[in-house]
Length: 141
Image (cartoon, rainbow, N blue to C red):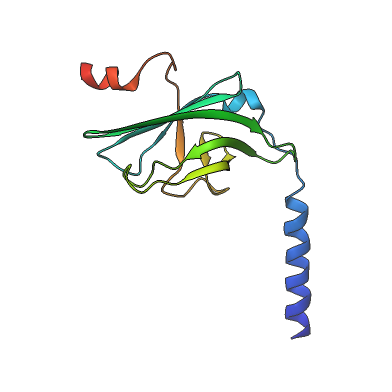
């Protein structure tokens, strides 16, 4: 029992140290267009702009939703961006929630509600030009 306590204590100390490591991603790295692929019948994308604003769009059949707000990299120097007025359009556009402030974890090519980038609501970064409307690209196909 004593060994288990020591191992658990050591693990918790290590984990707390990991929370203080600096984020290797800069604000400029997060700028771009991201897609959420959790619903194959929907087009769900997020544009993160250099000026500290974002736009979030969701379309599925006749459902068309959008909203915008501001974002900033967390002051705690973690790999997190904070979004104001966030709406989670990931519930097929029907049962979404509105948050005064929400966070997304930054990764090499994703933004996610969890730090590993593995949730079904993860947004994957694309190389698309944000001036192009994805709905126009679909019409051309």
